[in-house]
Image 1: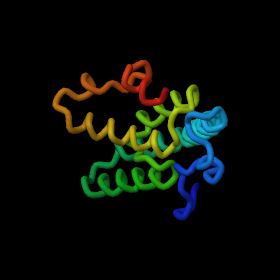
Image 2 (image 1 turned 45 degrees about the horizontal axis):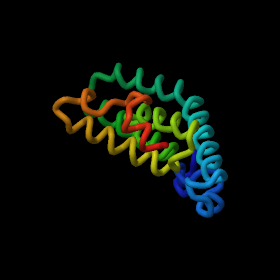
Image 3 (image 1 turned 60 degrees about the vertical axis):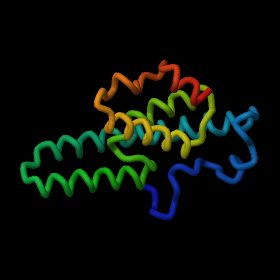
Length: 143
């Protein structure tokens, strides 16, 4: 697990990433590598997170459930830089970044958060903002 002083969205070599923009081959390759490593780490943690979510569903006390859910969200935020509830949207974006290298981890996390916030605030929900990786707006954002 990351220590609180580590930034999970900085990438593997942040000092090098700063020197190469998305318009360079090296910059895209660095972003692709960061996305692939993050996806791997998230996949490795998924079983543990799913188990904790299962345990949380069995909690009957409202306060205890709220504390358990907040603990899981915070743990995931510290480890991966996104909330557990945003992980699917983040993984979809990371899959695109792994192919195209168009965003840094921080940019992908910000976009995932913005999408989830918009979905949560939208009365039409998922119909307006699709998490589909083939969505034109998503492809344009990471291309």
